Image (cartoon, rainbow, N blue to C red; front, side, top):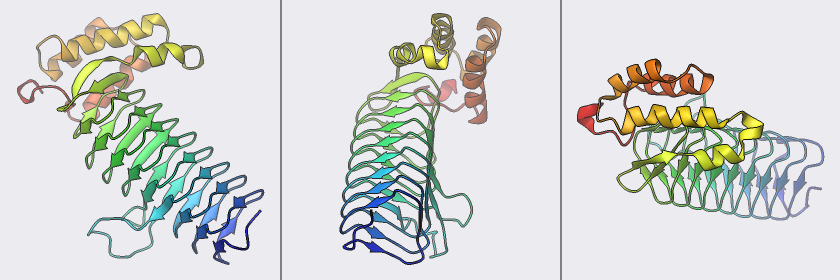
Length: 265
């Protein structure tokens, strides 16, 4: 159902069983997949490529022009996966370069008043709380929970299965499977409760959760450098894809992770 009171540009590609409510705005050069619903006063702007079964609530703007002086008006993109819920007054900016773009993965839930800046990549199955703010170029792994009013500064990276508590300011790299809290951000333990709850679907046994805790004791509680902590993890923690994910994240980010004193990096 497409309301005759909505604006839908003739060039927009609209899939099957799409509902566009009155006073929604669908720009030119937009693709909306099957089964999506666009609520009143929501806007889907040019360069947006949307998958299937998404819901965009009142006042949200998807694919807004990037807020970056490096963008000079060229055609850029915003990609939304499948089964994504985008609540009221969320703003998601397009990328600033013709390649790449802003990408929101499948099964994300983005709560009201959040702002996702240009070229952010959210892998999938993430929860973004009310009022969370992403600067440009932020990368977020899968199954991450960002509580309300978190701020993620430009270029920050968040690993898989991280839980960031409300109001945190992230200006760096948050390794996988941990809880981050306070300002300045601190290590607050392993995200064990969520991993136990989801363990049957994702293979988080008690042994693996214990291994994660052991790995981060070396990183955050041994008083040694991150470089030495990595060596200790390799020697002390049984090999597994989860251990390898921790080590890869730390190495890929040049041993620089949040909540470690600078002189121990």
